Length: 219
Image (cartoon, rainbow, N blue to C red):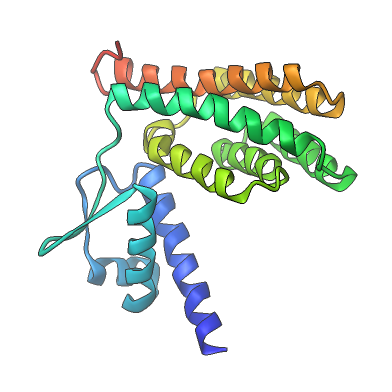
């Protein structure tokens, strides 16, 4: 029982620190000091240490000897392009496999998530990830799913560091609707096309972040 409580605290710490990073509250290069996190999260140091190790594996945090943990620097432009090319192929494979396994209950949940996103909530991005993750989990390809999650995590700090504009959310919602319709129709070609369009739209958000907010041209 004690082990389960410790694991739950570690997971809670992981999720809270992850959200601090992805929301831009903890910027790249910020030191993640155990005593500060303990105060901020109201969680003991043991679970926080475990959470930081997990975040290190995800690429969001770097544990540096004699310095401690810091928020990792986002990928370079070249890396981002390669990551998105890999995501397009991998996530299309997962979605096509999932198409055959999604239940009526899964489809209903996807409809509910999409309806929530169409209300343009402040946490639109998190509903977006739930939508994709539900689909990918249904692929029954857990190792490939983990790789897809790692690739997404590596660019999430750039995707989510600033609040998405309304026009971004509206575009993503239309793409999600097209993807869900393709899944219902069991149309593999359309699933691949609509999903890759959605991933490409995410890359366009990163380009805008570089060009307009970070004042670094994305070439």
